[in-house]
Figure 1 (tube, chains in turn yellow, green):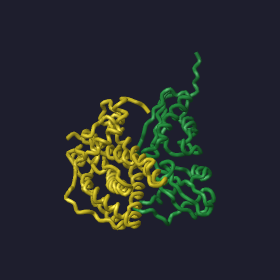
Figure 2 (tube, chains in turn purple, orange):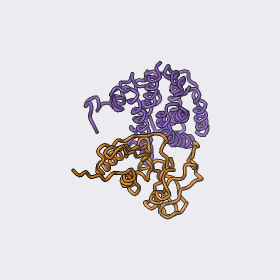
Figure 3 (tube, chains in turn blue, red):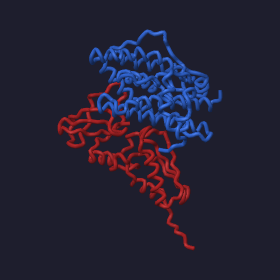
Figure 4 (tube, chains in turn brown, green):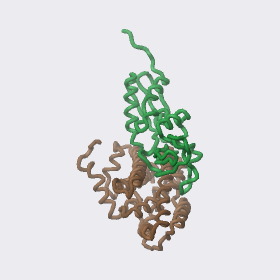
Length: 252
Length: 169
């Protein structure tokens, strides 16, 4: 595996994760439970779109074939998207979206921290900014889960239902392929298993405070980094990419 | 033929860049905000300005780029290239005391030093922000997200007024 190709693929995975998570959060715009929360969800969405753009810009540079960051976001189909299955899941209720956001932030924070030691300067630079933002996102969703767990029976029930449904997608975030192997060898990325301890420490701390228990499940679903997705991504991309597909090259 | 030989200096460029306001907080400039990292003048007609994004998704970045290019072209520089640098990551620690005072006067509580950047999973409720209106410390956070990516919503219990806090990054 060529290191340059592996890095391009890895950048796309990071970009796609943020892009899809951001698009899902943007679906909350004007639908937040309270005004402050509407602002919070769209602010987090904006941070993630920004991080996605930085990764896409870098991916476009690495690809060096005249394709732009916009082409990468809007003109690839679902089998060319490398995001984790977690972030593409539909929003559900507010507890469900918060749980999804929490699990993603609990994974992204130690990943970006570990990438500070990357031999790739651009990756290091982009993630050094992103990690500051993700800490705010993690705290936001953590506090909500604890509030749900100590709120009413209904709020506790809904957050446990969310966890029962979403936990099966968490292994997928740690799944690695040949690209990861090449990047670990080159000192550019890390063995994702090494950040699992940090991820588990975060989720255990919050779930304890929120009276939530991790479900026992054998129904683990993986495949995101190999572009194998759930049925939800295609539908989502149809909507997200509509304008660029219908009017190629349209400018804002 | 007599050429106009008044040479442009990098100091002059910095001075001009110092007049470009942050569109969200017009009392401070893009140089005070710390997003202009470097100015390189190759010759009188070609300048390279290196900027760093304040936030990954800062919607003002496009405006900054356009403003920088048009202001420097007005100065007579034909080619203006904008470089984006991600490292070191922008920090609110780069805001000077003078800039912080301007923010307070404008009604935005300035960011705390990043030594206070809280890393725990829960908000440190022991820390309060001084109200920019009445300078009292009996304040509470309403939301850690506000009208722009850089601001949080706070409320002052003394003067009963809401205010914005420039978040520490």
